[in-house]
Structures are given as structure tokens and as C-alpha cells.
Length: 192
Image (tube, rainbow, N blue to C red; front, side, top):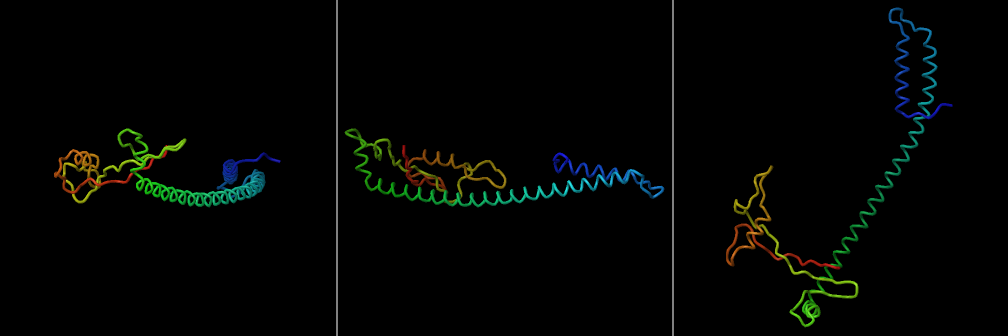
């Protein structure tokens, strides 16, 4: 009984024996030397080992394919669950925002408690829910002046959103930058 060998070892041994078979052939006489029988016997024995190894490799390959298909199916199932959960979170956040907007004056009054009007906040033991004020966001309405374009980068330059936003915030009333304006963004919800 021989020790288990790797496919790499078996391939190397097979090639070595084929080379040895070639070495036993005399091209001048067209015959093989006496060592050819030993090489053929070794090739036959190694052939049995190779067939056995290939059978084992086939079983391992089949198992790996089944495991991989099972993992892919599980990934798909978990991805669907994650997407449903993300959609539920978004819907729930939207409902909370609507409720907080509807009761905003009352929530601000409660959070102020005798001070100046506070943030739109709901406090319960162990949690605070705050509806942030809407932030201004850049909206591109057309081509913007060249000074607000990035240095040409392949394939083409694009508006520098940070510079445009800063410039728009610094403008006096009535001034504008062609092709860009600030619009009211969404209100953020923070649960802490």
C-alpha cells in the first residue's frame, strides 16, 4: 500500500516514467532496451493510482460544487431578506418623519421646556429621536460657468459640486450662478 499522493506528484511521476520509456528506445535499432518492462509495469501501477486519485478528486469536486451552489442560493435568500428589511426601514422612517412633521410644534415646545424653541425631538427613557432641519442641496439645472468645472479629467470635466455649493451659499439675495441653484433637501432622522 502506497502513501496517498497529490495530483501534482502523480502527474510528475507519470511524466518521469514517460521520459524513462523514451530513454529505453534506441532510434538506431528501433527497439527498446530490457528496462522497458520495468517502466511499463511502473506505468501500469501508477495508472491504477491515477484512476483511484481521479475518482477521489471527482467526489471532492462534486461536493465542492454542491456546497458552492448551496452558498449561492443562501446568499440570494439573505440578499432578498436584507432588501426587504431595508425597504421596511425606509417606510418606517418615512412614517416617523411624517408624524414628527405633523407634531413638530408640540415636539419643539416639549424639548425647549421654558427655554427658546428647541429641536424637533421626542425623548423617551433610553432613546431620543430627532428630526433634523432640511439642508440645502445643490441642483444642477444646466451648464455652469467654467470656473466651477474641475480640471479636465478623461473623459470630460464635471462641475465641482463642493465649490458650487460654497459659492451659492456665499451669494447675496438676488444673485445667482447660471446652471445651478440650492434646493431644500430631505430632513434626516436620528435615533440615539
